[in-house]
Image (cartoon, rainbow, N blue to C red):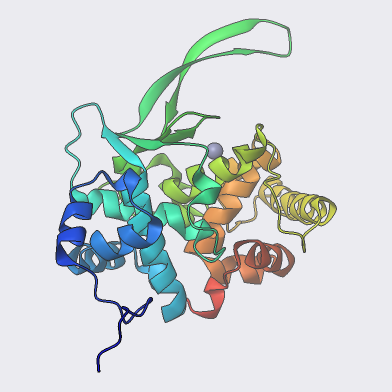
Length: 296
Ligand SMILES: [Zn+2]
């Protein structure tokens, strides 16, 4: 005799009409599990991203699976807005999403750390942003600053596609190279990781290089270790010695040092670990990732 009730859970057949109806809904109306099931990231697009960004593959298969699932959510939840005549393809969006999710992929918090912003504005290349500043004599100057990316509290994150493509390029003047390519730490360049680490820092409302930390890392340990590394690299740079980070990270205290360190941690992890094991270890605990263990 057949059972008089349908068992709940995995054994229950899901009506096909329900999935077809759910697929027509805006992604924002779907649960995370429904996004993964009904809007999976197409395999060719994912493989293309791994080819374009080989540093994403430097982790365990389990972590890579987490990164893919998080990227799928990112594409469903966050809005991409191309401006300046940029033609944005799915392949470009996946490439940005995967790199954006890299810093948080091991936290098992879904997209929650990125809940404070809704979208990504994509520019074809760097933009000139109006700036004013006051010098030591109290004189105010007006000018423009070239930006490869920008993260603002409560606003979208802006990225230059030309700079996204320049990630990890060696300083050989190859197409898409940036001014950073002529400097130390050039192969660690990654504007997506940089701006999304600013977004993590901004979760508290101000960018001071001290993002919200897990319970096992105290603000004191974070500050002490980062300032110690900051002094180490600043002194080496001042003496004309090569350093493994982009010297831009030494210009504005910890607020720029943290994103630049994160670029180096994910892009050239072995060199950061060799140059400053303590700061690598701290970032490894913070990001719950150990790319030096997997990097070639
Ligand atoms: Zn920055």
